[in-house]
Length: 121
Image (cartoon, rainbow, N blue to C red; front, side):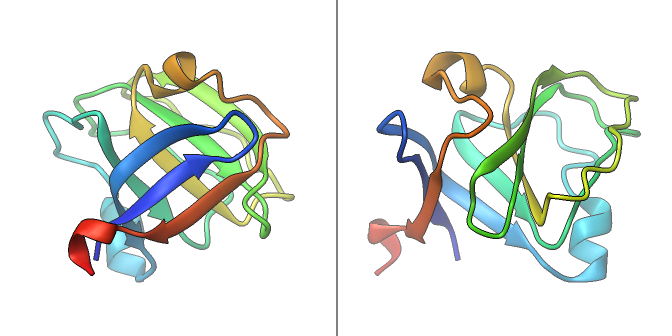
């Protein structure tokens, strides 16, 4: 079920249609094969402390989050065919459309909040 992601620190909405990937298969596939990721959409991968964009066709923004949803590391416009380092302080990764980080001003140390999408209640 989609949920909303807000940057509480900046009081900015990051996504209204984020999905969660918790199973091995969902985490492994991630956004591979997607030809677009519209603004307002995203994928929260739990647990996760590194990602790759192999076999992806689009650049993405990636926010590495600790257990309290505080931003540990930011990757803006991560292009296809890249891999990140492992960030041991990270518990999950939020993948967003490229440009979301710049538009929202999201930075390391910002606090995020996830909530049910009110359109689906």
